[in-house]
Image (cartoon, rainbow, N blue to C red; front, top):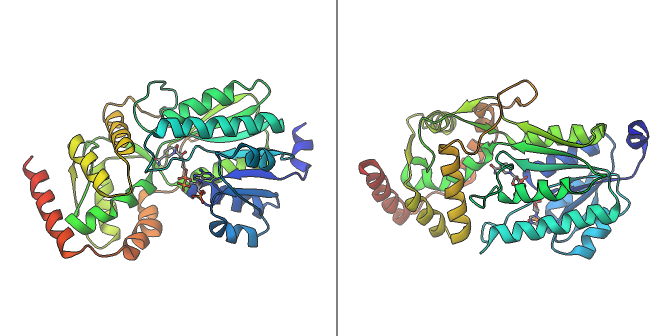
Length: 327
Ligand SMILES: NC(=O)c1ccc[n+]([C@@H]2O[C@H](COP(=O)([O-])OP(=O)(O)OC[C@H]3O[C@@H](n4cnc5c(N)ncnc54)[C@H](OP(=O)(O)O)[C@@H]3O)[C@@H](O)[C@H]2O)c1
């Protein structure tokens, strides 16, 4: 059955194919001569994949007819639940994406799916941003004949790139995670490699959970030292943000809604309390890319490209730094 599946030349659907994980999945499949249907809203961001032979499927996950066409006749799929940082109600948006994707899987009669899930996806309460992954795992598990791998990935190292504006403005790194609490972080490229390997082999059956936990655990103090060194500022300091200050800061960026800011702060709280956690570390759940490598290859180039802070932003940053230092 699996040998037959592997040799069948129907394409594999890759959702979020222009994103951090989906793009790696799509590139790896194309490299192995597996046909890819690359799905995302903006066709321009899929151009490179199309030049390498992927079928371009520009469209929205909220368009059921489009999704049904994208999944029809496919052999398998890589799926994820994206989130719009400006969403007024992220959980509701995630629910809608999930329901549309699962309906397309059901209508196409797919037998094999890899889902980009998250640590904490076993938690059914509505705290934090991870709830959408709980919903999706539940929906996928309800399809009796579907073989599915839930890749429960931990905190993406890529999230640290969002701190670049703060570093330029205030000369500090900050989140509301405790400074000395060690937690696992993963480079999103490693998730794409594991997902692609599953989709090339198609040798999984039933409902499988695979945690992906990065190379080791890091504290925010360690993270900040590594990121700081990569941008020539080894003395970069980490300051923990009180929850309310973090929410205010996220909202004032203009790119994050009040609802998403609240949920992100809740996710930080869940990390501090260990209610979101991985499983004991093993070779199976450990991935190779270190934070030092991520910092050299992704963080430092992103820092160089980001605009300098304005004089006003630097002034606001100085006040923030003083406030956080004394509070
Ligand atoms: N960040 C973390 O720490 C973390 C940890 C564990 C799990 N995760 C999971 O990782 C996932 C995000 O993966 P990622 O970082 O690879 O994503 P990403 O880089 O943010 O990319 C999102 C992709 O989805 C597409 N997309 C977004 N909205 C869409 C829509 N409405 N219709 C069709 N396509 C859409 C985007 O392209 P267009 O914009 O062109 O549509 C893009 O290709 C989330 O589901 C999250 O649960 C994240």
